[in-house]
Image 1: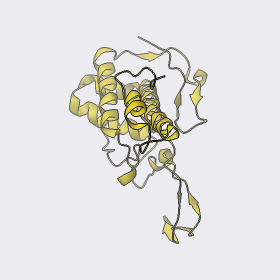
Image 2: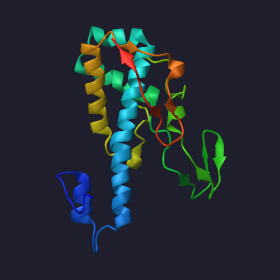
Image 3: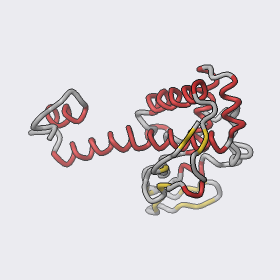
Length: 203
């Protein structure tokens, strides 16, 4: 549809400017469009919902943030929320090209490796008392966006989006609360991105 009726958006530019001879194939354009949707929307929207749920389940933390919803405090809080929630669960799969030992576990050449980002962000050797939400914690070493050359390209935008939402809630809706029981929420735990299908709230 975007190829036939282009608009002023990324998908249109991919379809019109990059799909063709000596450029991207149709399958490559579809793969890129899917990645933009998944990485640019699915992860962010689920991180927002999970972060709000974390704050609603820890009203003392939301109250601490509402006391001073400054940019600096919100930025620190967002890093902890990213660590604590971790919507993107799986790092890309890899195959060891040589024997290596990681954390006392031997991985042989040819064996597959799948890194789980959520459990990595709960590593007690890196984050003391990792199952506790502590918005004052320095959590910049989290792996919510991956690491190194495989770090999410959109991490800066995702941080800004989350800071805007969390800051707005702390400033304008400090009395926000769940409109249902946690046990009644429908969690998305059957795919690459973890999240919540709906988050009913009231204030």
